[in-house]
Image 1: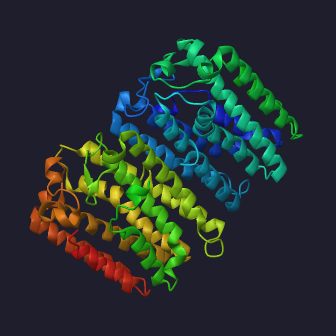
Image 2: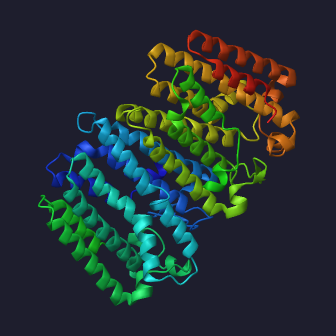
Image 3: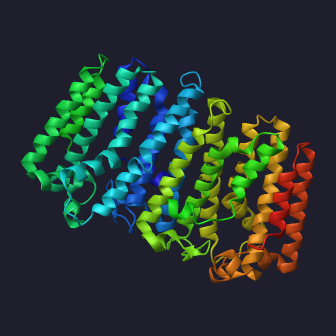
Length: 260
Length: 260
């Protein structure tokens, strides 16, 4: 569990949660337990995705994958325990800041984002789509679920803790939705033209694994245009919130221009 | 997910939860969502335990194991999704019956029972103990964690929903602790002398997998005596509760005399 949690990574989900709290003028530190819980879920999903029966990856974040170090059984169990622990950790939020009713909402939304109708559902669709020529709609279904839902929850969690009203919640959700798609398009682009040293895993693995990607469906230029469009959409929704979105905007720019 | 949930099984955990509510004079149906959540966690653990990199079992409850039907990747993901969904489902308990503060307690205790300090921790110890000659203490550590903690939570969940006081919670916990050990001793005995048709999986698999068992450490007669002792201890704690424990007593007798 610790090996994979400490293997680094961009920590984009915690950053999004902290930046959302900041947008409401709330000390981001207050959300640390929720941020940790989300990063644990993300980490567990990477451990399981890397397994030989899934993507069979040897490298992650520049280090040997969990099962390469500890074996398949312990990798599966480390993932299981991280997922389970995330639901304990999110309940460690200070009672003053997050009353039981808010924690209940967080647990429900986190489970939805991570489960069969969210991240796991996306991974199933991804596995079943391997080796097939996917349509753009099918590709988006995969990404919206596999990475999008948990990214979105990172923002929504901040909004729940800040007791955001329905309209704010809607605009922040929409912001995160488009940011998630932008993130994934950039991921596909980097897999094609990125630097293995910076990404921490071999480039071209999508091609090797016969995975459908945005550049493959839209051409590299088309994927870059789609990325720009999603970034614009996400920023439009952010502007509608009338919050202090300096940090959220910075993260959005980071996603658009990231090289790893 | 549905294949393994509907594959049957003894449903001992739901039964324990329902019987605990009944002991408090509460309609057991009110706890159905918590019972489902616990059974989902139990089912996910079986799916993952049966995988080739773990116990490599082909049969479970008389049917092909999940990965034999759907492949390893989908089996891992079905387990992940069941675990995740359990935290959504337990929050579906009626708000009138279980306020957010009680749901929060249930989520925390369920995560502890199922996670690294509970069931998953026990499975790790079990994997690491394979092929080694374990002491009785090591064997008990495995069982208390691998099966005991979730069995105990089934009773504790009922007690939390019934707003039991600390002394009641203590006695019910102790009852479930000893019942869990009795359950596991009987499991080991059945693996040695049981009927494959009734158990739904091959007998003698512990010997094949070089697993330490109670009969192996204590002899068959010694294991039977230990079973009787645990049953007695569990009933003693039950009597201390002054609740209407008719159903809990019946389940205890069932565990003591079960043939599958």
